[in-house]
Image (cartoon, rainbow, N blue to C red; front, side):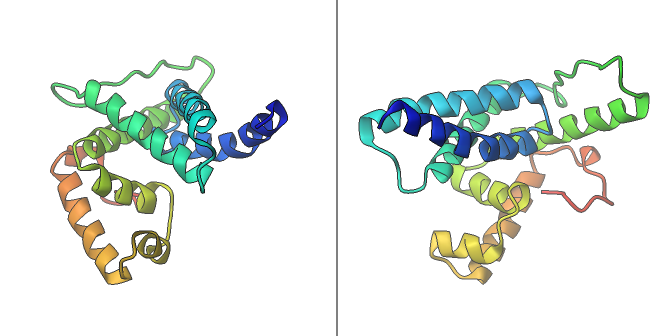
Length: 176
């Protein structure tokens, strides 16, 4: 592949990857950028050696998911959820509190996902973080929608054992 092709791939694949990673980390810009860049660097290395995969976007998301899983395994908090949130002097206190809550929840969910098996964590993330339909998930895994529903239910139960229930508001629809 020539340089122009690599640049086109970068322009095409990086924005959706960054958005997906950013959603998974509650909008933590530094972490999302680091994971996205590392996934791209690994893609360059692998794709130059082995050729372009059939679905580069899925390949990048899988690598980014693994990087996030490793990140949260390494920093598994001893008690509670460790936060790396820098206050923004220009934002209102209510907006800053909402951002901190979103980051805290994302950290808790990602730390919980890191403790699950990769297939369960990937299924939960694909459905609840990436918004993939049950039909898409079933087709990708060659399973019925009913089987996917069961795996998601068991996965959510397993995830709930690793997350402080106080971090999840009972009125929010975007719970894992």
